Amino acid sequence: RFAKLTRYIKQFNSIAIIALLGVLLNAPLQAAEEMKPPTKEETLAYLDKYQKESLQTAKIFGKLVVQSHDGRMKPVDSLNREILNKLYRKSSLMGMNGDQVVMGMITRPDIWQSIKMLKISTPK
Image (spheres, rainbow, N blue to C red):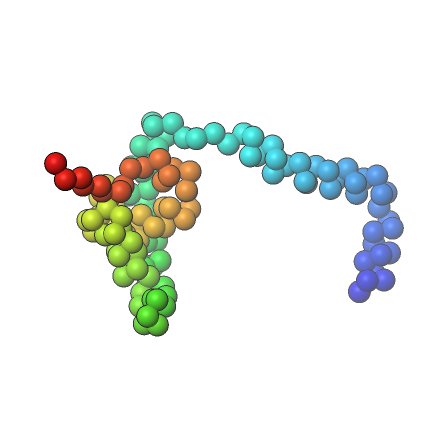
């Protein structure tokens, strides 16, 4: 395999390979510079669209099986409900169930990091 690979590489000009590597390695740096935090309007538009469109996918996601800290096998739906209940002290957030919230956190952390969901109660 290595002999075939070496013959294949020799066909290309080494300068072209170096230029291609430079472009490929520079692309993530440019993408990181272009990323900016979403505006409030973008966040609200995303949440409105996500709430409606993610329900079916969240149902499928909730059927995955995970192992809890005590060794019990349970659907990820139970884990997501526990996570949301511990963070927000309710079973839903903005009309979304635990599966939708956790799935949204996984897929779009840039949006979800700006959402206030910790319920803090201080004694008066």
